[in-house]
Length: 262
Length: 282
Image 1 (spheres, rainbow over the protein chains, first blue to last red):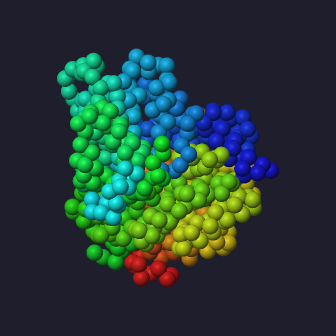
Image 2 (image 1 turned 120 degrees about the vertical axis):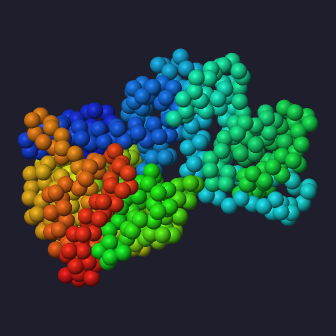
Image 3 (image 1 turned 90 degrees about the vertical axis):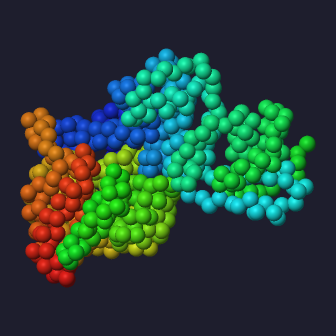
């Protein structure tokens, strides 16, 4: 008698690798062949996971069309099936898969559109977190301010792209029927995605602000984040930038980094 | 609302949320899929809004109670955190598995029914109940295949699980109908073999009929009205266990809310004819 773990391994192989051999021997025919019965489950898995990816990447789906998307999803889910049961969290690797997927090379902007959709999805489902008021910094001596490390709300995400992905995304959302042309040479974007007042918002940032916020989000101390922004714009107003972070409800915690490394 | 209406709920699906919050139809309760609410944001806010008007039942689809490698700590903790926040009237999961080798297969996959699998499922259910600090209802699956090495019938397996863990049962009468049609069994005998006192909830849904190699298979797609034979099983279930919370669910080709409310009305009429919730001691 096969152990349960052996049955489940064989079942997983049958579903993902289309290798029915080991499993079929365990299944009773009962008038309908084992492989026909197994096909019910294989369809359930493939269709439901493809639907989940389409829910998360609707604009990618529209850009490549339904049939190609189903093909790409099939290839993806075979090698990168979900590791968790919350399907809104499935598909982080789909971005890199598309970037490396040879049939997509004609659409060089596609991976960045996918990155944007992933950030929007993460922003929609990220855990709720209470923002800190600016007064919470009152306890930090001015001399320590350069060592401040802020933790941003988990809904915040950042994307820099050489393609006009915001425009591509806006004009290709489900239900949008636009004849407007998109100039792929129009230049790149610096985007921030976050939940504001409960809803997901996408906005474009100036390059210095983007550099600052992305550095902060990456856990860099305030001095290092400021240096990144000042390299892009020597007029960068650090005080205003920190105030804006709090005003946007972005900061949920802070710590002090170890004494400045040389 | 009649007493029998209070026993009837529907499965809450995202396209219906706004209408339910706005119109507050006369339903006793709502059931949500736990995995859709394990993050934050708009979905969680909607759940909080619905919860102000209706008791909620949390129905998990991802715990994988039948997995040989043991249920995942992280997922169980998230379910427990959600239950602590929502304070549901019921928490349920499935007699099935979805996780193998750390991969989540997103289907309710069938188990061989053996002493080994019974011990594994019982351990997993016990651990889930310990963490949740409440009784879990375990739902009978819809089955499309049977393992040659099974030695225990499905209702006997469920009865043994109840005896070992103190869990309750979520009796899905559509699943009983589908399973018995697909595997060749008597649905009424299956139902009668379940321990009536353990049944804490009933599920009602529609199914599809497909032809495969000249044979009919029923697919539990929750994409149609409840079939007449399933309403018959529902009557029988209520005769055996009294009126327990009963749910109409619909997933595929989701119709307007009014269609679900009509199905809920039929269920309430059946429950009402059988004496309402006070008969539950029968």
